[in-house]
Image (cartoon, rainbow, N blue to C red; front, side):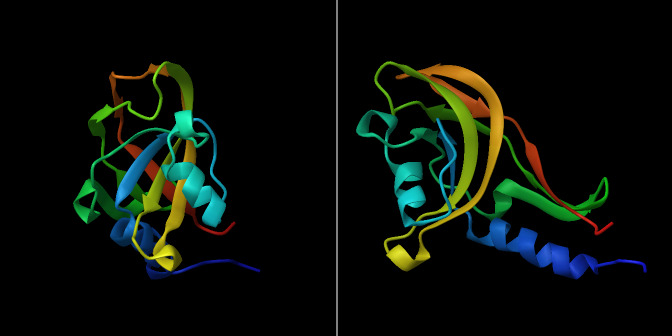
Length: 141
């Protein structure tokens, strides 16, 4: 039996990320997709959280797509540059990058998407850049 999904279905998920993410975080660990995960994502590493750095603000213009990917649909997160490493005074390894929705309303605070990154030791007071990267949802197989 064949399997398929219309591009519009996959695009809805990718557009949700594109239209709701307003911060990109560089973290020391993967945050859970819960209220405590949100707290860990936004709280400095020096204060028992995971955050080493974050973008000032991102918006839909920091993404391109959705478009066809290798096998499905993809959304590209554009490169972010010169993010201040201010979540730690000394140094720590960055292992994850997360897109989040920050809000004053607790019910609107979300960990939207997390991925791993090449582990890199970051030192407080410096800057960090993230390259462009893709989020892909594969077609069913």
